[in-house]
Length: 181
Image 1 (cartoon, rainbow, N blue to C red):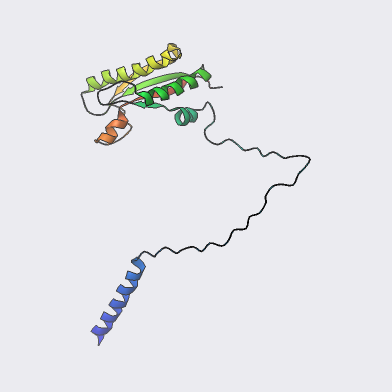
Image 2: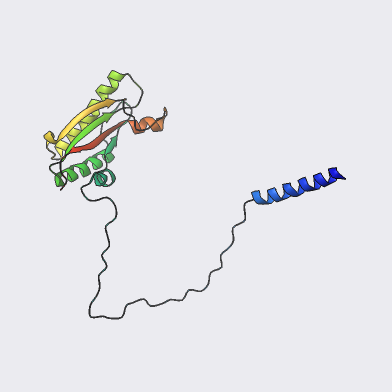
């Protein structure tokens, strides 16, 4: 008798657990007819204006540069050529820098983990120099731009796969000093 009671209880527990584990079917929502209401305000002699606070980064801030302008260009394996997307980012950087003439930047050339340390330091320097040269060609004073190569020493993506390597092959523009006001 006790064995059949245990089997009955076990079956009840399994059935209740099975019911909890199933995903419920979506419920179709019923839609009621929508009444159209005229929300045109009545004519008034004075109109109140609503001031909406700007959203997003403050113009001229580091976040503005990072979010709205772009701080990185990316390179192909063993390459340092700027493609059209990179050139657009650098054009935005040059325009932003023209608006804030006291700002100085540092352009860092970065590589993925493949290759020797020496090879990647040299390639990173070429990548940083190409960015500087392009910004100068767009009118940025070269005395405002310093360059450095970090080679493969400062990856932004961990991993030894193509996606990580592609992210780590970049030229990074960083604001180092100056006033944006």
